[in-house]
Structures are given as C-alpha cells and as structure tokens.
Length: 338
Image (cartoon, rainbow, N blue to C red):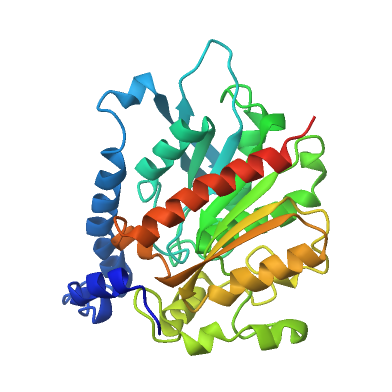
C-alpha cells in the first residue's frame, strides 16, 4: 500500500484508526461505531465552519429543516440556500451522506456543504435517511428516493430552478444511493420534464463483491488487494453490507448491474487509490462512458476511503475538495436543460 506521506504520518499519530479498540462492555458494535464518529465529525465541521464568516448564516446562506413523508413516518432534510435577490432561483444538489447505511446523519457534511452552497450558488438538500440495522433494506433507498421526489415537487418553495441543474450526490454508501436514485428516476415517468441532470459519486460502491459481472471481473482487484486498509477494510465493508441487507442483485444498491446505463445523467466520480472500493468507481465510469454518458473521473493517489473526514487539513484532502467543486461546476455546465 503506497500511502500519501502526509496521510501515513497522520495515521502514525492516530493508532485508534489502525488498531481500533473494541466496544466498552454493554455497548453494541453499532452504537460504538456511531459514538466513534462524533469526534472526527466535530473536527471536520469546525474546519469548514472556520472557512465561513461568523455572520455567514443569514447573510450568505439560510438553513431550513423540513420533514419529508416516507413509508412509516417522516425523515429530516436540511436545506442550505444561498441568499440572493428576491425571487432568485438556484440549481440544486440532493446529498446523501456516507456511513455504510449504518452510521451518519446530516451533521456529517453539514458545514462542508454550506461552503459549497455559498461558493457555487446552489441549494443543497441534505437527506437524513433511516439507518440499518434498525431500518434495513430498502428503507435507506426508499427514503432517498422519496426525498428526491419531494425536492422535485417543492422546487419553487425551495427557490430551485431544476432547469439550472438537478444534481444528486453522495459519499460511499451515499454515492450508491445517489447512483441508484438516478437510475430509478431515469425510468420513472414522474421525472418527465424534471430529469436529474448530474451525479456526483464520491467513493461509490456499485456492485456487491460477490456479484461482479463476468465482463468486469478482471477489473475488480482492489477489494482483495486493499482488503486490510485502515478506515475501511474489506471485512468491515462486508459487515456493513450484511447489516443493510440489500440483495446482491438489487439495482438501486448496485447500479452497475443495470441492463443498460444509456440515458443516465453525466457523472463526476472520485475514487481513492488505497480503498477496497477503488475499482467500483473506475468500473462504473467505464460502464457509463461505454453507454454514451458524459463522465469525469478523478483517481486520488495514496489516499484511503473517507480519509478526508479524519485528515481534512492534508494537501490530498484539500485537493479533493477543490476537485469536487470543479466537478460540480462541470456537472452544472454540461447538464443544464433548456
């Protein structure tokens, strides 16, 4: 494993990431994992909060929390909207956080997304879908799709003009959700005239490791070669997949298996070199491009899955952030509809 030197040095000072302690007595593995996310998420939040002026909320952007009806209840969405002239409208990004369908919430990427909303002048709808194992498959996907339809139905109320850009995006499991809802929306008459115009897929998983299609099997090497990497090992990945419980044939979770990728929106994909899921993004870009979809792929060298949450101030993480903003600009430029 050829780690970026700055990331390797940071890892050396955080042994808890390379040799995590077991859960305390009486605490489940799930609850322990959720607790362990709190500290790095808070530091990540603080880092990006400091990039905004103290009075940014209310002057540069507005934050609104809404409830979206779903089967069996409702879910939270956090809406970040740039301030603007009266009746000004913006493109929109519907965002799905990562965490293996098991951990995470809207606070994970909150302040990073606020900086993106201000920088790119777009509305961001950050979706808090329900988590496994309390809410196993297909809850996360159904919630994500319901939120997508809710945005389309409420665009005017959200100061959104879908013709300026209707993007979906996510990280890790959230990227799987983003790709999955884009696939389903392509074939749903509900989205006629209000199609998804772009997808931002950061470190996606697009195929179950036991179900690689024959034509791509030779391309999937990272799950074995990077099986023991810090932050996400292949063993942990399998555990999370099992907790979520999606069948290996489910297209909403594993969109690589779709019979056709033609007609999908342009895709901007970011992957990490030292990640069991590296090949998922690379192969999906290949499949989309073969189907005539516009794509842009960035492969970060010497980086780990989700490294930017723990090592947000490294040069590699800041490059990834710059690339993400450039990728979103590209999606907005190639995906606008008339």
